Image (cartoon, rainbow, N blue to C red; front, side, top):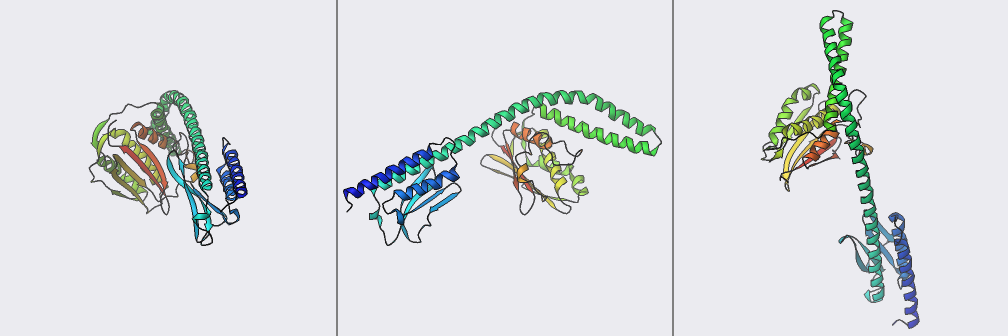
Length: 363
């Protein structure tokens, strides 16, 4: 039996704990790494036999104990829910067999429920804040891309004519001259002009919403044809490719020219980074009303700090003059235009996997 005086002391401990938790949870931008351990400490003090109590909190990527959980124990338990879904648990342990369930109080169970509820609210606040920041960055990025698209369209249009003149006159000089050095210099001008013209094409593609010729077709033959066209590039780089799933019946509506460009851009990048005698693997399959294509290389991989930047326009890790930084941006735009999604992952033990998902249903 517990005396009236002891009951009063326990209620004071519980009220103090509630006040501390409410204060910690009241922060509009909580630091969970700091707040959650403090909640555990506060809870431990609130239990009747606090010197023997261990608070265990498991949530998201955190596993907190105050102190270590006994090997044999009895405990009170409450789930932590976030947006209606259980994401963790909160427990208070007593060592067994020194203690049994009769040593827990009904008021402590209610306090545990309140603490679990407040922790869930804290995590919801954090996730809402992250969503708001992500949405704000997305809005800002879309605004920048709209302005950038208008500027690049004008630049590309203005560059087309002088580039055509440079290329034409350089080819004429190379054809007419008999001086070997002049021929070599003309060849450099021609190569630079062709590279610049390709950049202009990508600028136009990036800046304008290209009309789509959507037709229901089989997807695997498009991939097989692209690999056949890139055969000389594979052989020159001394790289093999492996295609699996080419015999699958995967049909949906897509623009074959645009998806061929997607394949070319990703495969050419894969060839560029792949060491000689390595293999680029292409997998095709379907699942849950989605068509999938994965392109895996054995190159050095993409550093973590660059993974969020690779689809941004003008971002490139290639040396100056070898990359425009528009290839993957164009790829991203085409896939989004097909209501799809593109992601990249680390390949094991080395390299990168690009995964493309495209809807099989027409919306």
